[in-house]
Length: 433
Ligand SMILES: N[C@@H](Cc1ccc(O)cc1)C(=O)O
Image (tube, rainbow, N blue to C red; front, top):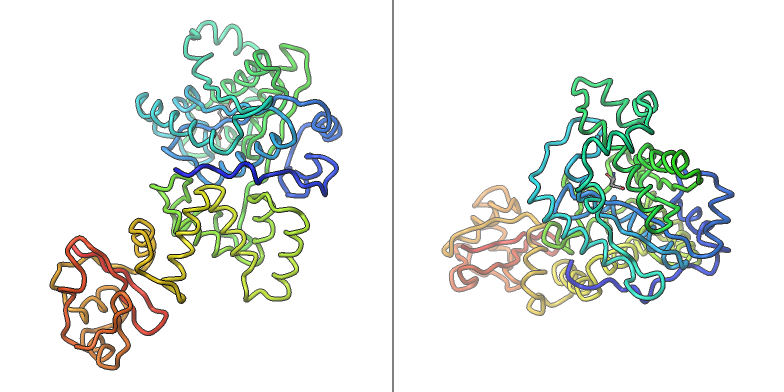
């Protein structure tokens, strides 16, 4: 994540009476506190709201992006965001339904807090009356003694209620059980909301719907302690209509950090979105207007083979996360590899990440090309490879190979890379040591 996000081009769609209506249309409200009160609140004077992110990895991922963009939509409507990164909650671990988390060292958590703050800051404007403010819950829990915590906060929690929260209940019924540490998590998040209510008059917390127990932990606490009704919105969990998990490609999470998931891979991920999902993704992950999304919806119906909606989605989200230059480089790489584009015009990083997504092999500088065809899976045997070369169907960096015994010596220098092609559309990457 190096390039800045294009904040200037983002806006709420005029087609909606207010941001609440827009959030609904985009499918972002799965569960919430009183709807009528929330609608009135969001249509009125600017309010302060918050969303929290735990440093459980060195980068945020696509699930977090839903939250960041929801925050941005509220900010565009004039409301004031607080971006919380959980310096203390990251040391404890929000219980997952499956198993206890392993604790990371304090140094690691501090480092990840810094990285996540940088990421959160990139999606929200830091200018004007409603500039984003970044907060860290370690600031109010780090110095709190266990005795004070139990006397002042713990006293407001009933264990019976805590046990009923989904995350806790599912763990209690599993073999893994749940530690007292993770059981306490909901109190910490509830306390955050109270603290932000007191310090900033924060009256809305957003999060994924799996956070509902933690969100209501805060609204209940504030109600009990301060006698005020504050709000929460849970966004839906994003799912793929074919039942596979959203936000993963070949089992790996799609991270927002370019080092952990190249812009090329990121772009391809969105490009591969199913027709059945592409419209709801456009609603959640882009700032395109309702009119434009409806136009694309009609195109999915009438001309699905053109994949206009997918290309628009990939373009928009990659630009949002990696910037316009990275997106242009990625598109140039796809065209150079699969279309008419010019390979030599590509920058090395983009080409390398593109080749890493293809079948690829790492080889010594004297490797025979027929063997590389086998190593990358483009043919089954060396003799088949030689035949393919003899028939004129093999090229290296778009230069046709004439000799079936040719090696890459003199064609690719040590430390370099090349595109190996069989026929028009079958490609592989070759990395030379
Ligand atoms: N529990 C949230 C992160 C969070 C932490 C502290 C908060 O106050 C709010 C949210 C999550 O795991 O996604």
